Length: 275
Image 1 (cartoon, rainbow, N blue to C red):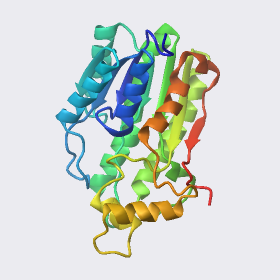
Image 2 (cartoon, one colour; image 1 turned 180 degrees about the horizontal axis):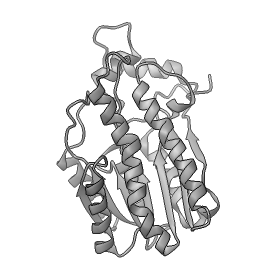
Image 3 (spheres, helix red, strand yellow; image 1 turned 90 degrees about the vertical axis):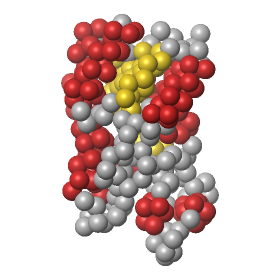
Image 4 (cartoon, rainbow, N blue to C red; image 1 turned 180 degrees about the vertical axis):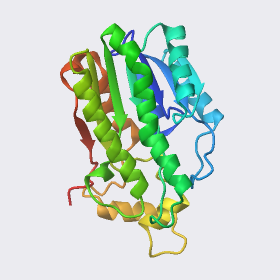
């Protein structure tokens, strides 16, 4: 028997990266999965976002684990679209046990280099999107007296970092969202927690814009330059964390036995943030 047998989990940003890894991990433990992803480009974002083929591939990988899977192409910034995704989940599976509010985007550059449109997209996806998803599932979870919510923040909230200010602001915001919700829901059988990884090996971290921020001394930094720079600054010498390692923490927070864990942050430094 799996640790998530019979459970139904909605995972946002599920087409690739951390979201896909979390979906596969929960499916492996017996959960039915609902993959929610915009699977489309947002004009202001500086790197390619997921596409429908990524969402299809994620569903195939989930189903290879023997799990049922529903995919919904939706933008977490759109409340009506998220409400519809929740309604479709209940219609398909009859319940919602878990929300992994993982969808996120980042922007690189100084405050003057990042546009108002990019700021709105980052805060809208990372913070307002998490709120929209929590708000949509809560009536159902409260009615059933059960729920597990895990929200993805970032290790960058723990210290000042230039060139990602809107992202840090949004990720600090979800910590406050988590703490408030955890207190409101503590007597309703619903837990709310944060998973806080540092640099993760996903498409969000790998772009020309990211490389220029982390390797400013080169005009056209490469993947190898980026990797070597991060390795030098990591206490372990490992440049980034693989998303599957973050999934272990997510699984811990959303399983049945985690009823006493709420209002907390599970930090996954991967050798960062303590030097």
